[in-house]
Image (tube, rainbow, N blue to C red; front, side):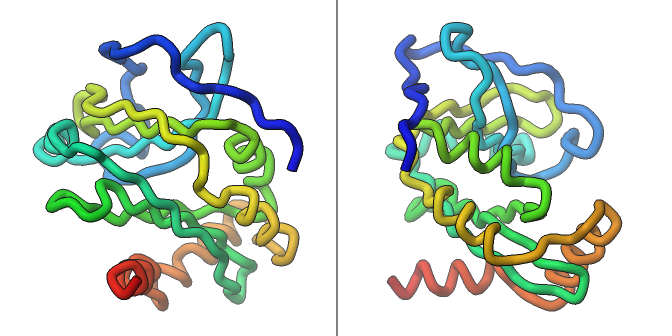
Length: 188
């Protein structure tokens, strides 16, 4: 593995404000990898941004320790492969949530490669209505993102956004990824 970018948060506790959520993010529940600048000395980095409904987003602030696990893989569909990350947020707590992120292996390599190249991955939990940050945690980056890049090399992703949308719809309609991951996690 190549040398990783040290993006450890060194500035203690802060109140964070992010720009207002827009488009399909506003009011929706989901978690995805996004680029943000958290520290101007580091510049852009990839963070896991989890958007949840107001009543739930605030509850995560009381979970200590709040753990994060990433379950990764890919599923072949008639429209091309769909890669996924199932985020297990607040694992082992009463507030535990499983949230899936779908990625196109044909286009997501730069995003995942940038995330894999960081020493740390920040989890930011926001209220999906107000965009208020309720949790900011800097985790050591042991999420298997390098292995996900290896998966990308061994599958053919959908050739365009329309095929990717159809591939995701195929997965959502035919496979309960979250259920399979949850069952496997509970049997470990």
